[in-house]
Length: 480
Image 1 (cartoon, rainbow, N blue to C red):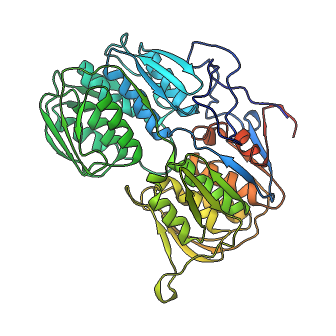
Image 2 (image 1 turned 135 degrees about the vertical axis):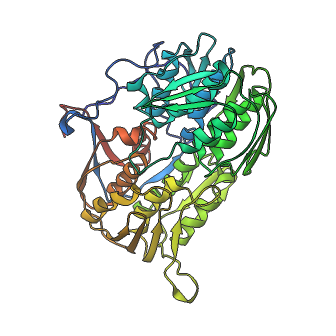
Image 3 (image 1 turned 180 degrees about the vertical axis):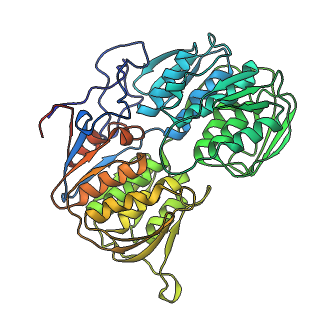
């Protein structure tokens, strides 16, 4: 089998001694200053045979310990926030995944200096950045490119940004961003690109029309340098929003209400550099809960962000998946029978997502595949994205008993014996769900378009092999 090469090679070491049994991502083999090399990212029109894929032999229980990487959705706004100052910002526990590398490449193209100081520690020095235009081709590779709007507008008074890319999971509104910018005094012009101008932003009382995570992050980054006080109401409060706010306060921002739906931001003249550690990824921890249940395994999730797992544990407990907390570790008892817990009077239960602190939308795909291996019937209601549930047809082809009621709701009856199949990864989370299904299925599966999975999960094949998974990554032209 061909082996993967890290798209960005960095010198360094892991921060702190690893715990016994911890399977770290493969270290970068050599030093290289540039954020990315041409040709790393496969064009969207590339043929399936020209792209790497996973070959998975399922049906084998796993065991051992695995540690969540740094929170992807916290690292992305943290990188964007580094543009707010002309002093270096050092970010620790940064996941080396495709989305993060893409955003680093974009900020470097704007004039920032980017250097990896250790395997998961990156320094961003934006002293060389000026007002400019973000390249369209780069912006279309990642939805997080929209996070550059707030800091560039706040620091330079103007920004031109093409529409962002990202997962195809339904319409993802940007209107909340523009409403917040306008409330802070920016002029917004839309003509196929986003033109934002504001010689000086001013604090305001802003009610967001939805608790959008990225809109909240953009509004906070714009408000920290605005004149006066800004109050953001109906703000998102996810762990990654909290991380961004804590980073900004370390840089000298004044923010009250972190972790709530009401943020009060007193603008300052300038921000300084800082060193900040990204928190563990609660979505990755939830993915490992599903992995343990589907493969019938007892797994320990090391250094799990247990303070952010209440709704996640409640949802999986409804599926009959039991977990226990041992210090900072989460033990998943997937080797025990999983029986879906009916509601009162034996009514069919449901798992539905929502804004924080509800069950995370990014775990609904994982909940669906987990439910296929649990005894009973459950309704999974994805409220936030109208295309995310369409991947269920791939699980049905593998033997799952799922009725897709509409774009938002699916009824799952389990347990079902899954069969190996050749499937595509439609987005990051559904791709991980398909990988979990393949590991629990009888026979061999091939998972294509795995670059979607790699956008959000660092070195996932190598880390899963450390648990005993039989998975290989096949490069174009490789055997297997």
